[in-house]
Length: 129
Image 1 (tube, helix red, strand yellow):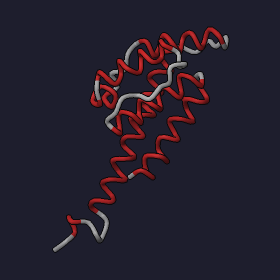
Image 2: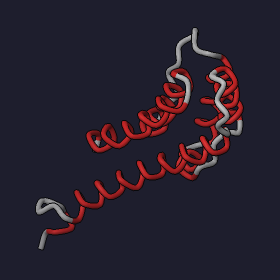
Image 3: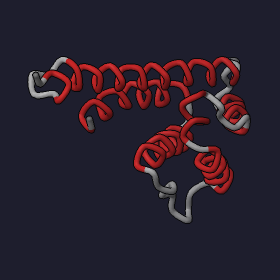
């Protein structure tokens, strides 16, 4: 399952790298990894304190909030600040919606990989007679 996660989370990482700052990208990916592994975010002391607070709020909200698309609005505020710095006219709400769609697609692809491994493998306990 780790290989499936790595392949699929790369899609989200690619989207983030193309549409937002390196700091926001790395923070969101760390939130995903921390949530998957059931741990706190590992962001060093030099990390942007605003992004650290947003990441902590996301972790505190829990796995269901992350997977269900209930992300703090402060992500959009940070994206708007990035857009202002890069003189982009893109809307942070559109960025957030696109990011959530890609993230949920990652989850769906992981579920498909898990389902395939569980039900279509000859070695699966479900296929034993």
